[in-house]
Each structure stands twice: as C-alpha cells, then as structure tokens.
Length: 124
Image (cartoon, rainbow, N blue to C red; front, side, top):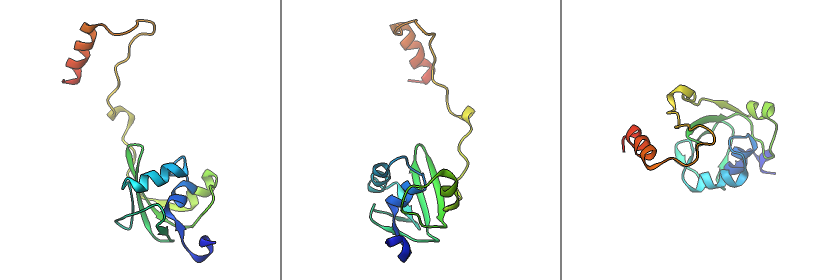
C-alpha cells in the first residue's frame, strides 16, 4: 500500500478527507488546475505526503490544508478532521452574498416589465 510508504494520490486523499463529495470531482479539480501542492499545480496521480500544503478551489472558496495524516479510504467526518490542519480563510458571511430576487409563489413567469426592472436593479 502507498499509505504505508508515506504517500497517497492527491485525488484520493482530497476525497478521503471529505474536501470533495466524489473522487471524480477531486480528479476533475486536479485536471482543471484547482489543486496545488506546495504551490505547484497538481495532477490527479501526483502523490501527497505528511507535511504538504494542499490548496483546493472548490464550491466558490479556497481551502488551504496541511496534511497531518495520510488516509486512502474515505473516512467519517471526525476522523477526516484529524487528518489535516485547516488554514483556510473563513467563508464569507451569508449577508455579503447578494440575495437573489424572490417572487411570490404562484405568480408565474415574470412579465417583460418585471424583467426590465430586474435587469435595471442588477445594473445591466
């Protein structure tokens, strides 16, 4: 096993410690250039070892974690939290996110006038 040698594939590790929901999402993030190990862009098969800094851009925020423990199989949240040190910036507060326009239920599709007013509010 690679975990016994001291290295694990980065896509498997990201998925194992629950930074992504699926392994395929972890691999896709690596291929898209959203994963960096110690500042270098990582491919899915690149190995990660204890002490490495992993940066992951996922779901609209950047996660910065330092590998404490190598895990190959997906583990529960309490065990996953012990596998890395989270140095990520805090997520933005919910109020900072612009609220989406809400329409009353059952009012149907917006009219052309409604759409123009919404575009004007958005600044288009």
